[in-house]
Image 1 (cartoon, rainbow over the protein chains, first blue to last red):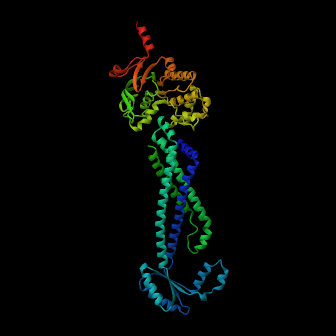
Image 2: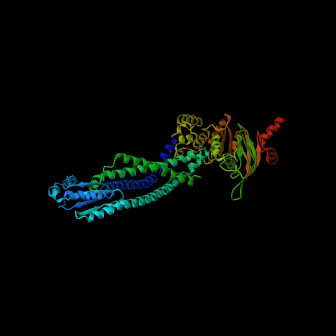
Image 3: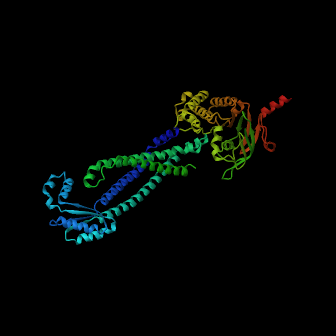
Length: 288
Length: 250
């Protein structure tokens, strides 16, 4: 209890240094939070695209149902197709209406006749997509083939790149935070050098002197983590309606509360580790 | 209780702060450590509290070999020794009460118990009315009393007072000496470093005299220095006292 009181005194008596330490920690955790949201969103987007049909063949208007069934059977006997789903003109209209239910003008202009029937196909192996795509393109029944292999692979490679860059930046920011905290706590130790000397002379043990500085580092980390989380979560909450509209159809929003709480818990844990590490380094360096 | 045997302390500059010093102080004794500035009084105190290590020799405090004491035991040693530092070493940003309670906090004593102890000691040394003041608000004598109070909070077996009358007027100085004498009467071993002759004369106590880092005399009731050393260096300097003893013998 006394240690916490001393820690609070140390923080209160040099507010600008405390502010600088909290600010650098807040920036680090703000970045970590945004980066985590981005990774969460991109992984959800990848799952979404992966769950979508990998190849969609749109049929010409004059094509009969029997011809479509034949083509479907031809595809199925290749043993490359995992699943296939026929979407009739009426089904396409239903999907269109659902997607544009808030825009009556678009609904009025479109009828089932102008929407093509389609066949949505997923393959067992991703490398079979090209063969299926080729087979569909060669069919005289098919007017257009949408092949989503590129979307998923591009998104995956972007996500991987993002993950590497983000992790790199987090490491750099964490190191910057640690160094700045070491300097700030080091300055505080230097300022209290005579007090520390007096405490030692009247019998204070090493840890009695060290603990307040270590708690101080942890406090900066935890406060920074909470502030960073609050700002990022608040910003995401504020922009959720516009992001939902922009990423229409993708099941990313709303982000579940448990995710936010989990992120907060993880960030506090990381903050404790960063705070302890930096203050411990400062104590080792300046409190010999 | 305290024994220094052939202790020398050489600084990095090559200067000897202490040279071949030996003396003993027994439990419950009151001893004056006298000598001019730079004679090595403070260095002896620093050796006793393991603030410094001797270059050669042995320092024993309450059966603890201070020189060989492991680092993790230093705080235990310092809790056994109350020190009134020459520059007082009070924390200027803490109140007098906060300064005095510090050794108890350091020792992990419950705040309620510690508060009671501190208030009793403050009353004893006569500064209870100043408990919420900061050091800058107190006079020299009051600060000296605060430093003594802090040194006494852990009920140490030994009290080292380094020039406690240094910057005080003679009346206040005598009050401080009287206070230390009262503390000694309750069983605490007191070593008072001073060059205040009035203080030495006021109390009929043993005097250990230093000059330029050398022991020039051990006088008074109990000059029990190690044999080989006492032959070499121990000189009775408290002549008046010796004369009285000789007179009594006759």
